[in-house]
Length: 331
Image (cartoon, rainbow, N blue to C red; front, side):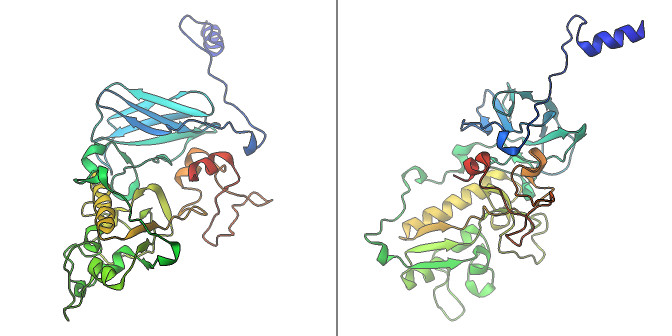
């Protein structure tokens, strides 16, 4: 009897039972489906939150909700449903404002590491979990009217390149928020000799555009230990669409870094200075353990003929811009 029950259960012939959905298989990465929508990641309203992740070959995907961006047990673990074109989706019919989230994919019967998704726009400390925030609260006064300065001719452009931390981290910068987004744009800062520093120095030089070295979330700085000496230029991408937390006054609250980044941009524009952001799409700071590779193993990276990760970037990996979904991600 037990054997018969097991067979019926396996075949999905018992009332209310469904056979397991077959996992799609593909001969090559070129055969992976392309999702044309623009709603990957999180879509939040006070009434509901919808999460979408592209992972065509995964056996299963689960969403985990947390009260904090680091540590603690999940408040909920939700099985996501396979939808069209390689997308997995889950909708929670309640207000999740302030909660944090991560995804976990299963391949070959094994759960991969918990990660954010490539399209995340707000994260907790160290970028380990997405943060569900009120985007209206990230806008400084007048943000909706902010516009970049107009340059009459390209030959009039004067570009100054800097690292955000470097510009004001030394006590001689005179800045209060040293090494931070807001420190760069503090007005009337002076050196011990009385010379203009920060944004006043840039204006004095006649700079029209500021080229900022990577200000997106990078992995090498431990944002829980910002009282200790740490440094990196930022060419080790973690979350491409999120400002780096170590430049914010509070790296734990995902809204703070976004609001302060906007304040910095707004102040630069008001000073007549355009902003150029340095973005590194040709490699990521991690390879096997990266967000991309935990969700869709292998797809986002080039491999050699022997199956190893290609390393033309000399940074451990190189992203596969020839593949449709990474090309879509970049542009």
